[in-house]
Length: 184
Image (tube, rainbow, N blue to C red; front, side, top):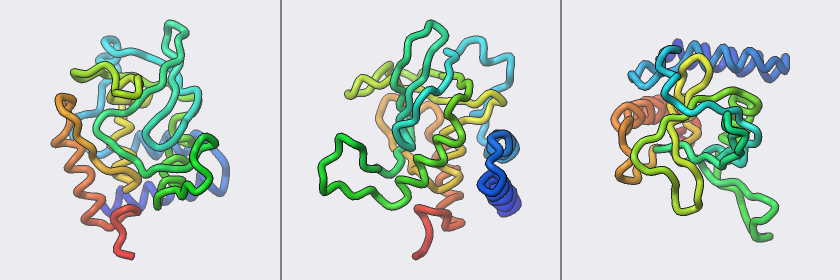
């Protein structure tokens, strides 16, 4: 796993210094944890397809579905730290790593094709669609943000299909002290 983190760090550093969007895609494709939640190309036919048009924060973004409808999506089983928005109260303070989670999500997903897998529930109380989110090459977004230590697992029954796999990814990030789990 340390080799994977080194690869992630290398690709993110290259992305930052070169501004190349393709490097972040390559890092996501190469470093997705092997939890069994990634997809093969032929499995994507049964999922909803869309393009991420706007990232609100690390765990909320807008997706234009193939039908042309834009829907707000909440990835299932992850909770990223909060940031302040224009509609936030004046005394709002972002949570630690909230901006990092948002930046990671923007760089990884904005303008990208995603494949969306539903669990049991269709929407959350805020009317956001609930999905497991996959990148073009099959990597699951939830695994990637958890592996970076920029979100934690948040369980809301009955949507628990990949709970064990994602908790394993979170535990690895914790044991390595990555971002949220650092020992500062």
